[in-house]
Length: 556
Ligand code: GLC
Ligand code: CA
Image (cartoon, rainbow, N blue to C red; front, side, top):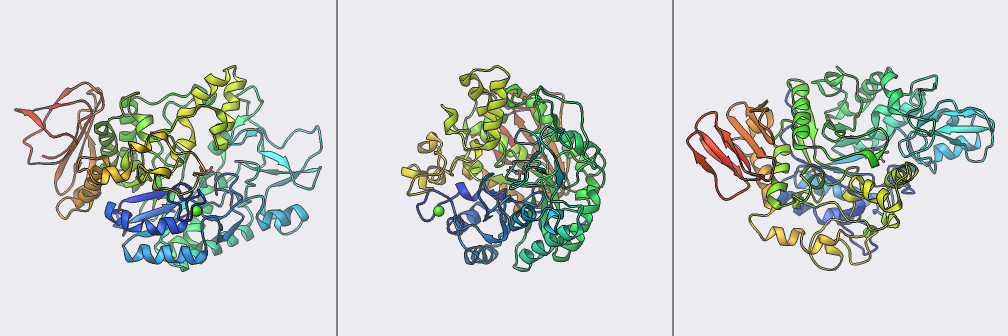
């Protein structure tokens, strides 16, 4: 495998709206991010991905962009963005932006012009079809946020347009070379500014199965999951290769794809030495225990399911490239609430989960607040929910016969708002996030869980993450932590997740994924204990006695 400049780094995702508010309007902003760069440096991260800060009506919190070349005034100015890039660079931090080009906003100039003249130049930037009241739609795909993928083109009664996500997110027509040229021009404009690269949103969706066609309905709404078409659509690779050649490669930029549902065997094309992207997220754990009926039928994965999914992904990417490993992001519940057994949210357990994920081969991404063990929030009323995805799933649950209270309880654990509550910087009013009223209510536990408290306490979750990052960068172990092979250790031992990282040295990473203690036989003598989330290591001969949720990194 070719070595890349970003391999040994640790990445961190910022969801700007909820990160830090510098002017008291309750919305996080770029000046807030700039003010925290020293903090990020102290933590040890070297790549920062910013969720979208472009001009946007925020129908999907910025994933609906109305101007790719400007910063939304709520987040700041272009001067702030330039300063962020420069100040990041001074601290060895590359800034990565979100690239949302499967769709734009219905308030983007392209779409407005397409509405004015559907047969004109910009009409070809979208999927627009003739349609008359009472007629069948071109296909029965269900949009990700509910309802059909088709809506009336604004200003028309006989034309419709396609949207895979919300109706305020019309899909861009990648079949049109003029559109692709516009996209590449925009990417290069940002890279010319010194941007480190991009996280690429929902990218598999850019290739549609054409002509549009129906699939058997999978719910009583007569629609089918849009994923059905992704399984059949061929040719996304042609677009991805072209984009890589026209943009990222020319700059040696970092790129990480949000890739779901890629075709088996495509991994080397996507993240191999000369892949379309530097990396892509490993979502194998995140899609566990889902149910096509809707969130109301989902559950949280077990430790054994989690372990198997991680090991599967490690095996698939071995010798191919680097997956990006996460326990959470802005679309997911908080990892500690999702993967740890119910009610087991001790700092010990949080460190174990974080450590097990962080030490996998690949590029570790932390999501804001993960480093202090932020948890899912509490909802007592659906009116407290902002996220359009949750609101849709709530309706799905109600239609399936659940009461209001049952529907809320069923969807709350999976709500994207869980990750979007403001970062808990301290225990004072506004949690140090804002001096005003936060746009989304704080998680009430901020008085207990916050950075200020953890920074001053050596055994906190925060300092544990710092130690993980320091190990990844350490002179002695970096080579093994970054490039070592992952080999499962005693995978059959229930609720023990253990693996070797073998390279220059041999490390054994082990987590007791349950509250009960259990013993783990050692493969040989312990040369050094590199990390332990508890005070003690109870060893008797070649057995280690692991306490509940104990986590170890040993050199063996
Ligand atoms: C991605 C984003 C998500 C957004 C969607 C549509 O999945 O992560 O937040 O809603 O794409 O852009
Ligand atoms: Ca603000």
